[in-house]
Image 1 (tube, helix red, strand yellow):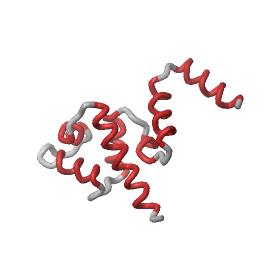
Image 2 (spheres, rainbow, N blue to C red):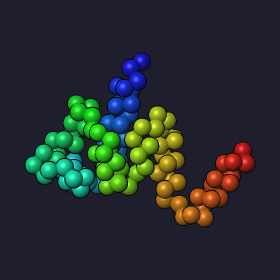
Image 3 (tube, helix red, strand yellow):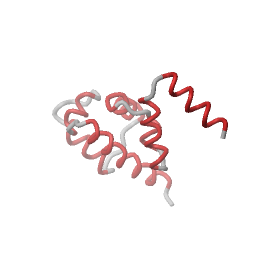
Image 4 (tube, one colour):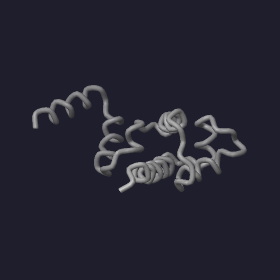
Amino acid sequence: MNTTNHYNDIFCRRLKQARLTSGLSQKRLGIAAGIDEFVASTRINRYEKGVHEPGTEIVQKLAEVLRVPLAYFYAEDDDLAELMLIFLRLTKHEREDVLKYAKSK
């Protein structure tokens, strides 16, 4: 298995999922992440299709705009990716409770 392609496939799928969940168009996401408005839609489309792979700085900006952790884009396990999103929505106290529970197992 080619690890680079595997993680790129995961990134493409997660980027599109997060964008659709956020209700942003490719163009709006690209512009919000600091990509020139004239190429924003095309660039995001190429990231989602795996034609181009964004650099770390762009991925971080995309994560910030989409309000997902950077690791979400690369989590191999779908349940783990979903758990990351759920964990982010919890209050500090709820996070502490979840961590306490998880550590007890």
